[in-house]
Length: 72
Image (cartoon, rainbow, N blue to C red; front, side, top):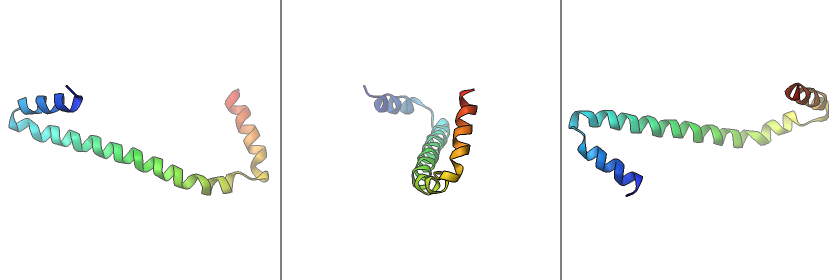
């Protein structure tokens, strides 16, 4: 039996008054997943723009200093 089938079976056992809570939780999980996907998409879309700003010779000195700080 798949996870989906098991969940459906358990939902069928619940009294009607608890189904609203289950539905709210499902919506919460979906919203959380959408936020994660949205943040990942923003990051992917903004990376080239920030790379153009951050990857330059003037800032190279800061890059080397920050890597030393991280390694310390």
